[in-house]
Length: 224
Image (cartoon, rainbow, N blue to C red; front, side, top):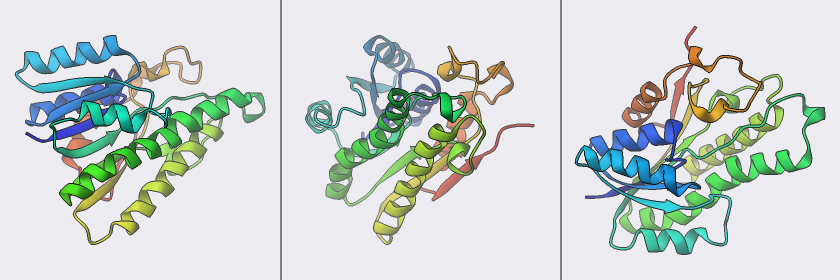
């Protein structure tokens, strides 16, 4: 059984993607910052006779990622990586403080880059595999009160498209996944969205992403 590594797996889209991958028969390494949430998802997967393990990790912690990942993947064959971890700070650009700006880029852009760099050697050794970067439609076009969030997502878009060219002709495939708002805990504590229940359910978005693994891009627009 080969393994998919899924970041941000404790909740939201990461959780739903991990559950679907497990349903399809993959072993899943659940990566996130909160062990309690990861263990709950692991229990869900195992209750359905799936296979999962957990790794508490901050994807922006570049110094510790390779070693922790190597330990968690001992004895496993990596089939792919889903970079779903991310955060959001919203509001007028002039009112954003520098700590928020740094946090956005560390989690959304650098976290994706660091995790991809750490997982790629496993895929290169196997000479095949998949990397899916969850970007959001904020990586396709700018949005009011989302300037730095969009900038971090545009960075991931450029990173993904560049790797598609760098690995062109190989059996390692990179997918850029763009979706609109989702009804997840992502919006908790934010005044940017008044009612997230009008957004798409993460289960449906996860299904479309899992089905599209290997494609260059997946665009899932917000329902009208």
